Length: 324
Ligand SMILES: Nc1ncnc2c1ncn2[C@@H]1O[C@H](COP(=O)(O)OP(=O)(O)OP(=O)(O)O)[C@@H](O)[C@H]1O
Ligand SMILES: [Mg+2]
Image (cartoon, rainbow, N blue to C red):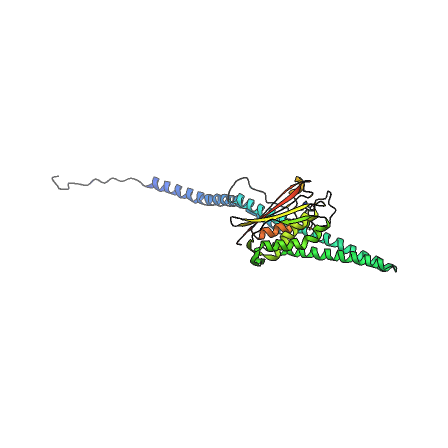
């Protein structure tokens, strides 16, 4: 009273209910925490399994493919997530591998078939000549066939080697300055005998010189193959006209003939290796010429177009960069 303490009041209460509650909470925590940890571990294991299952399947298929079955594909998961994209990319890669592998296999079997034919002829002719004694004239005939077929084998081998070399890409090119006019003129001179036999006229209508940077051996092979075809697949008394000009930074060479032509369904295949048009073609060939032409143009970063009408004639348009 008036700032003086006059007495104390003490209030107390039992804490036993609080202690009880705390004990209960302790028990609950003791039981639920391990349970919670247990279920959490279980469910995270389950989720991880589920998430990793597609990767597991990718690995499994990949190891099967590695053992040699290139036709297998990875099952693509429905979701378009990272794994789905991985599987798709993987499948594309295997498809490409399978395609290359099959082409390589076909090429090898075609090549060995092409080589086997002349070799069989050579050995059969030689054996037949040796069985009984014959007239000198018979031996001469046999030897002529043997020489012809040997030439075929050696030509085929050189074409195959060229293809194998060009498969390695641009690095094998021996680039130098070459004069297109001089090269085409020399090919025309070389082909003149063959053309004369069929009374075919070969003409070059471009006057100016055109210098480009390219591999001379390949460029000669390129135009030799196209011009040889326009003589081979031409009628008696046919015409072949060659001209070239510069357009932008490209040299364009046009080779046009009025020969037997190619039908539309065959036209799309003429650049395939070993493809030959069967109808009305009696001339021998391996079907490698135009695939070599295409490889050469591509390794020079150029372009080639073909236009043809059955019975009317064929036109090739080759475009090569002036400065490779
Ligand atoms: N100028 C052309 N006129 C008509 N047909 C052609 C002409 N050039 C090519 N062809 C057709 O295209 C096919 C493929 O030509 P390609 O030069 O690749 O092979 P090939 O001449 O048969 O054999 P190779 O050139 O290897 O001796 C030929 O078989 C021929 O039928
Ligand atoms: Mg040819």
